[in-house]
Amino acid sequence: MKQSKEEQKKATIRKLTEVARVYFSDQGYADASMEDMVKEAGLTRGALYHHFGSKEGLFHAVMEMVQTEIAERVETEAAKSEDMWEQLLLGCHAFVSAAVESPNRRIMLIDGPSVLGWETWRKMDQQNSMRLLHDQLQLMKEHGYLKPVSITSLTHLLSGAMNEAVLWVCQMPDQQQALVEATSSLTLMLEGFKAK
Figure 1 (cartoon, rainbow, N blue to C red):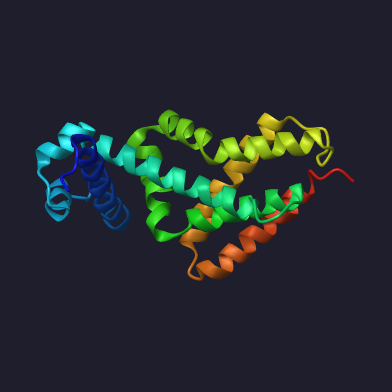
Figure 2 (cartoon, rainbow, N blue to C red; figure 1 turned 90 degrees about the horizontal axis):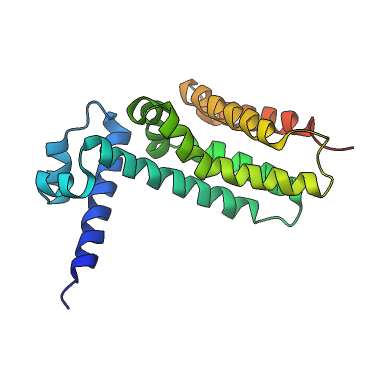
């Protein structure tokens, strides 16, 4: 059965972003060759420009894919518990664990801010993981789980701490041990906001 133009378009976009994700993750944005990416995808450079406008446009699409996947993992992990406090911990730990994985970390936390610019990167973060964190904290505050605190400031504080923790974990020789230490420290920090 022949694909419609819309199906062909979606398949082309999906193929390019999947191939580009591997290149951007393994080689970094600067060293990822557009020629190599389109060749591996079995497409032309014209297809890349048609759908994404530029290499930066392709990177933006890949970044959106990574952000969306991580947000979905956060939601999935948080949903494993009925307890709001446990949901918060599970969601935060899921974010850190997902962000340190090699297909994600370079794209999301190293090249992302420098290629897309800080403001664009922050908007994308706010639409995904930060939005989930804010909503969970707001719900917890409404149900009396948190001490009196500004939810907006707490969201930014925790998001910044988790992003920095991911960068630190990625630099450690024993990343698994560093991940355990980071999530343990994160749990202790969160406990400080818990209503008695």
